[in-house]
Length: 224
Image (cartoon, rainbow, N blue to C red; front, side, top):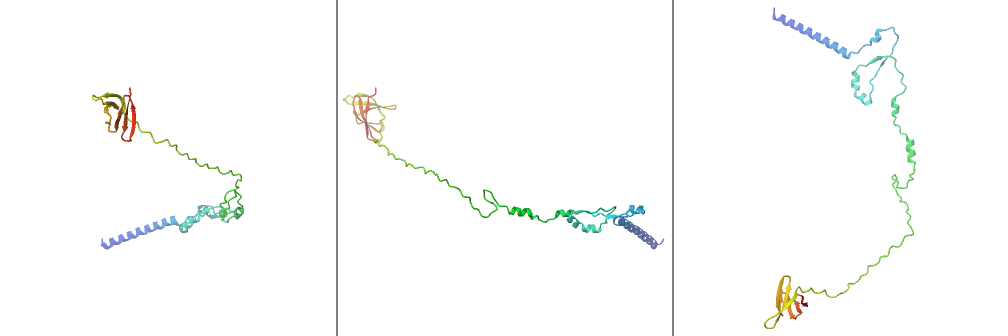
């Protein structure tokens, strides 16, 4: 067999397969987009005249606007039967005409309340009756100044010593026994006790003591 004859057979086979594939594509396109016939109208041709009505796809205006391009290429669905008579359209209920009757009736109302009218730019406060029988103000009594009573200089602090006995030395000089807390002193006339008390005249039943800090002289009695 010659090589040219084998190539020619392959080309014929490929052309036949391509033609069959093209016919299959045309048949599938007609089935999908070619439209359909009404079997009921062709089955009984003698049953009488019938009316076919095209049923449009309902929806809002925005949805119809969006699908207008797709509906131009889509097939129209045809349903057999008698078309119903249209009585009215629902768009009549969507009339945006404004009813001004209620609005004008409200505008002519006059405010009759007791408080401030919030719908008015000017406001006149109501008159308030001032009571006439107003009692006079309460008199203010000035405070009475009482000067302090002078009672003299403050008393001098007592001398913190206790005189509880005497002693006589060999030369006849008297000495006094004095007690301050737990400390016992034996002092003669003119001695200084506890660095602040000067002993004066020493008697049998008393002794004179001078406080050197405030120049205070007191007589201490003999304590039993």
